[in-house]
Length: 115
Image 1: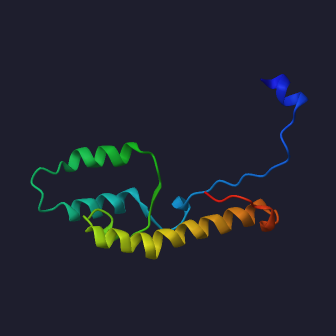
Image 2: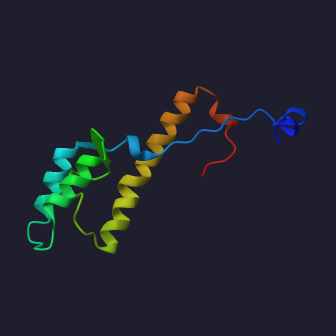
């Protein structure tokens, strides 16, 4: 495989991959756990110890969410979910793409495909 790449090099291309995960709201593990416990306070089968262990073991200092802290663990109706996608997630994706292109430093007119 390597020899065929050497004899037939790929045309020069740039690829920019990014997600919206770096945007939105960032909360500490403690804040996320407190929000989860608050949201689940009426759920008798909710296992606080298990949730604590899982969040502690993830090893992240911060967690990214597109939602305010008081909404991250609640159930959404279909209408609420679609509204969230239209109003926030598309904007997060656009912001991620613009930042990736800026960091790339190339000419945006050279971009031929968006996925």
